[in-house]
Length: 160
Image 1 (cartoon, rainbow, N blue to C red):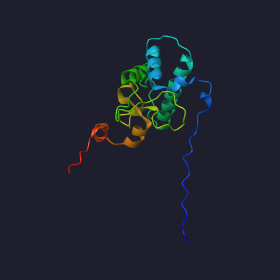
Image 2: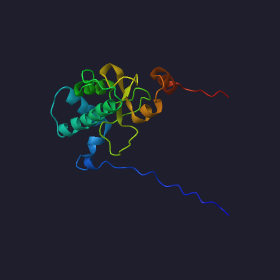
Image 3: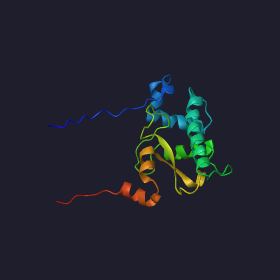
Image 4: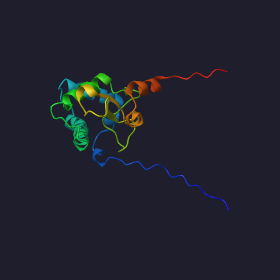
């Protein structure tokens, strides 16, 4: 009796609220331009929605801190501080140096931007977070950030 293994395509959950955005909105180059414009307080088409994406994630980090009982309203990172950190990162992951996106189509997009807490026992404070992709954030877990960075930057060279 032969066993059949059926491999199904991974289901991607498309974020339904993004259907009205132009395609360039999802382009990395344009997102770098948009974050620069937000930082400089320059209004652009869809700037409210772009800022809304950042705010939505900020609110989810606030809820995460509240549920873990590490919330401090005086120290929680602000939207302006997030914009500055994202701008300084140039939308590049701190660990793997791959492009990250503020606006993305798939719900669990591995290249979406996240705030990685340096010390997980402290909340999302400006001096306790750095910008990275979701993939690295989930892989790092509770490992020391410098050790994790070392493993991401390490290049193995195979000798013959």
